[in-house]
Image 1 (spheres, one colour):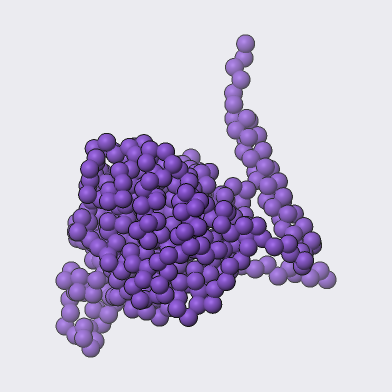
Image 2: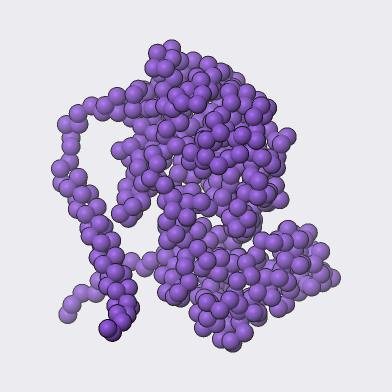
Length: 515
């Protein structure tokens, strides 16, 4: 008798993604994400509402005499009120009807009317002609299978995780455009692990869909900290992306009242002019040439030099510094060219930043980490006061880390850091920075460099120039490396086969007119 294969069950988020993607049909990923994420959000707030509604209905203990339809009861416990026609059970009962799209749009409207903080946030795209009612009903049935039974009390965690996973999958599906609303999870995780935002104000002036805030809250929770000890501030210029951020944060129970939108953006219309944050965490657009620099000549933020109108990199750095408090820190992504550029005064600004003892650590990143660009990238870590006593005095030093050999491919075009990679990089920084840390240089990976050495290199900050080459490894494992190469080759062949099938399918649809 043949043995049954022990097939490992896929995580719920992967199962849901595959099922949801099958229902997509002729809708492109950029549009479809609002359909799916809107339903996930609706399911979340309905679960939260129903949980409190049940307690109010029973009327026991502190809920004695409470009215389960009184909106104030829900506001008091920071739960969104969901009117009867927008509750998940009602929509689920109508999922097979041809007018379900109109029902869901009306539900989104009704929720916004009863919850002013969600005004203008929720998608109303369900009655459009390209989303057929059968597929929408299938999605509602699919979403109904999340967090059933005893998992209902944990639905915020379950749905939050699924929402985050779907954001990443939609970003991958959209490719270049996906990078505009999503920073890869492993990059966000590394930034947060490096900065360790336990307590204080966290600010992201180009916040996308809010991943930096979600990861910061997750970090505090994992370290057994108090979520009330951190508060978040953000700004986003893309209205559609801002809506995603508001839903992403609400599904995690994170207060997003200070996450602002205006279409002018952070440079022209700073929504938090007076904010001095403890942590700035950001992934601004790389080499942005359309940042309105000509309109901001002589701006008070340009303390270290006037940034060129054709490239916003050094404008972002100084914008971050402007918002860092007296002992604050910043960690952000920047195009690698900013480490070496000497044109348009950028070299002078970089020298001024170094002489002001503001740059703490520079990390060189591997290729293929980002979805929207092939431009090489780096991470910068700034500290307003490198001798403030919280850590050791490192005012005359800077740490360089080169991670180009870390990470692994998850498909032909995309690389990510493993948890072990992130821990290794963050621990290296903390051991270098902390008073009780045990740090030592590692050729090819990390090097602590004096300001004098940096000045001798004309303030060029490319880590490769300082960390050197790795020592020859005597314990090179040929079998392990060969296995890794085989896996990479298999993934490339698999992707090529997929593309060939798509090409054949599209060619078969082409009609050749008869002569």
